[in-house]
Image (tube, rainbow, N blue to C red):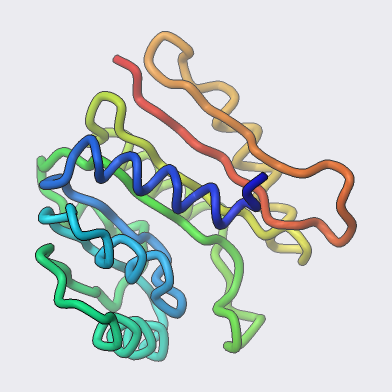
Length: 190
């Protein structure tokens, strides 16, 4: 069985296989692991836009991309801005996949975390441009107070998405201690 992060990468890989020239978003760059994963996929020739509000996250992500063993065929840009401004950067382009790793920057200031209002605004804006069968993947870390609040609010809002247009999947282990990461996956079906 895959853990939440492994499963998120499997889903991203499937999205790239279906849309190798598509637009993908890394809404929370962090240390660049998701962006590096996407850019390392040899079939990915589309584009990636990554966001973070911390300069150190942009720097760490650039270093990680530079250390990839092969040069990527995809274009990418990393933006020092909040993901809730995503609509300023995607215009009317269709988004084929987006990933969020919620919480705080590993190795960074734990007081700087993602917040439900900005996360949900970003999700809503991406939903407005999400391609049919495109996915928004949210890796949720709820082992801290802000993370639990964000998780609960996301569940409350996303369970109300119209089932005729979206499927929302919760993927989590229920017998593990310390609130292991979990996934919420939103797929547009119409």
